[in-house]
Length: 351
Image (cartoon, rainbow, N blue to C red; front, side, top):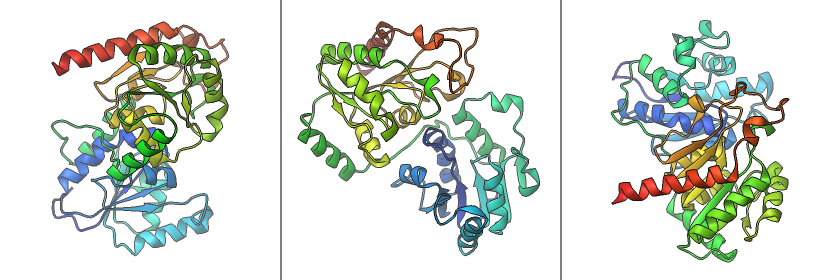
């Protein structure tokens, strides 16, 4: 990729929040390679919210596939919007055929991405997705893509998200109104996982870990999650000895980011909020069962993974047909011990 690249440059975001966070090291590499270029991000609405205020993005183009960009006519409408921008290069983090087709219909001459989903003929530069590449951690997977396009790998690649001071202040005020004083220690509990129920640890064990850590650390407990996860958070709330603040189903993406930025610690399943917290520097314990910790673990030094070895794990199934053994083997004590250990390590490094 030439330094004299005409502006602007389009980056097509992936569709899931957690995966989108894992593209940010590669996005940072693109920004560093083309500091004078105007970088546009095409993203679905939730991911667009995630990247609001992001320093590596100049403009966000919301791709509303469930709204005005639905169907063939909607895709042509989005393609026309992109065509008017006179974009010369598109870097497609999204692997789908749809992403390459949209860039092709938009008349973008330089269309670069992985040769996946039968879209090689739609790409001007197709990077092979070999078995070795597919086994990479997802953050490394996207860094490999841009490296293959001639973009230098940063010396110290890192995930990056941005929460504004106004957003943090608004969340501090909201928590204060709910009985969490400004400056108090906050323990976040994220019991949901959108991929499927097999990824979810048990409510009573979340409750036991939250009680133990909040008592030991004198921390306020905040439950979080999406609207479909409200019953799950309600179960945890009912099982706890200490009364938590339950914000499940009551936060936008931006409010969730502000909330996670205020947490002193997070206990979480493998999920989008796990990756958001990691990018914001929040220390965390991540509970892994059926998913592959080698490719989707939190990409940070301030995290501990709790899992048990099983002959069937990682199975990557949404629903378990073996009694949920990989999650049953993880006790509340194991999670509490991991949290204590991580905080002890952080304290030693700080001194």
